[in-house]
Length: 387
Ligand SMILES: Cc1cc2nc3c(=O)[nH]c(=O)nc-3n(C[C@H](O)[C@H](O)[C@H](O)COP(=O)(O)OP(=O)(O)OC[C@H]3O[C@@H](n4cnc5c(N)ncnc54)[C@H](O)[C@@H]3O)c2cc1C
Image (cartoon, rainbow, N blue to C red; front, side, top):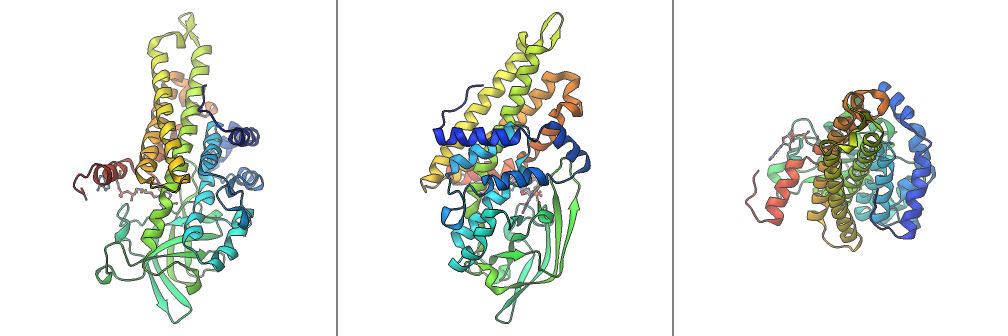
């Protein structure tokens, strides 16, 4: 399959990720999928190879790579049939700490996160009642004396909470009606879940193997020194990390789309029905060709967003479009791949139905398609805010 041109360094990273992923074939993922078990060995291998520390600067022990290199890592994982959702947050959740944390906080946590001895891959934002409307979240953090905050409330879809030491948590510190601005009054905390009392984590079984949970806080005490940045400014800090998350997840979708297209074209060449390969029929080859064109277009937007991000320029629109187009491309490719395989598309042993379930998520999380369209309508096209 034709690929976008890469620098030599990125080509080497791709080859290294591919070699690592080759040790984790379909059988590995199928066994975990059946049990809804966490891919501990896979995550360990990625950690030891330093891939999850790609975006942490070298001064903190990370690899200090570019966003484009990080997207290549995530893309290759998915294109190999593996599932980076088990650990992608270790790569980008630390961005909030890196950009808004104090020098002491960065020194205390980033080297461990870079090594992988500290896992920061739980991100507590979504709540059952507020959903996409983050500003309506109800979890509160109340100051207790000089040294503590007390957290009460609930989060939902807090993925990997059982496989993380730390959680980046967004909670309300000022009642909504008392906040100076609509977007103020929320604060971000780095919660050390290993020592937090009053924390209950309950797994949620989902259609794919995702290690997601709901989390309950009952007077959970967090040291005041674990507040990131200024109290009340948390929403802004969380938003500033969204572009990286969107670009990286868009890259995962590109990897998924490549995997589906590769599987479909191989199968269409081999499978003979009516005495000829099914891929000789335009009814079979056109959907594969269309999925390929769609994937390549989305890939260009991922590269555009990553380039703007690296240049320190505003990339909100491009990061959102990359996520939208790439999620659409992976979902279209998934559907096409099942269709190309006929009945075998549904057989567990082909991995297609598993990847199909896995890639469906990206129409909804980490941001749903509709919310991206609303963002573009309002912020790019100047249309009235719809909600
Ligand atoms: C497997 C999984 C893992 C996740 N991991 C995490 C995580 O680690 N941390 C975390 O904080 N969250 C996580 N999420 C939550 C995820 O970000 C949300 O599910 C997503 O943002 C949608 O929010 P919601 O489910 O509350 O849907 P809702 O907000 O209830 O929306 C439901 C539907 O209505 C649509 N909708 C809502 N409002 C509007 C509007 N104004 N205009 C048009 N359409 C609208 C949405 O697009 C959506 O399709 C995860 C979710 C899943 C399923």
